[in-house]
Amino acid sequence: MRRRDLVITTLAALLIWQIIAMLVQRDILPTPIAVAQSFIENFGEIMRHFIASGLRVTIRITSPQTKEVRTVTVMIASTLKIGVPGVTKY
Image 1 (tube, rainbow, N blue to C red):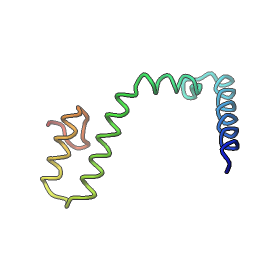
Image 2 (cartoon, rainbow, N blue to C red):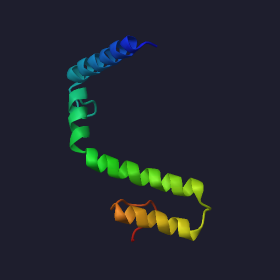
Image 3 (cartoon, helix red, strand yellow):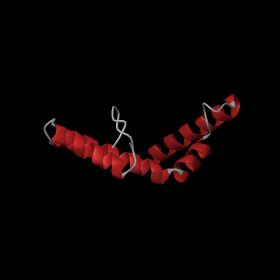
Image 4 (cartoon, rainbow, N blue to C red):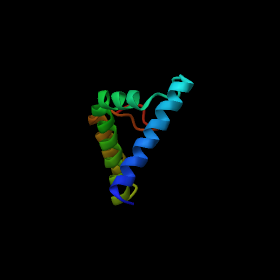
């Protein structure tokens, strides 16, 4: 696919999304502009979760499943102030 086709397709998809969101007018389908604004406002939080998830996945893939691996995962989550499923305290 050429770059021009990709740009046209992306713009068409955004336009269709915008039109449908304006017709529906419900919170369940925000406009692309509202999504972009929210993404920018929450970028730091999103990146913090992205990094923590990436580190947990990397640790789990590269290390044997031991108590130490869980401890390191909890330490990472604690440092980034992100919860770990199944763990209530750090």
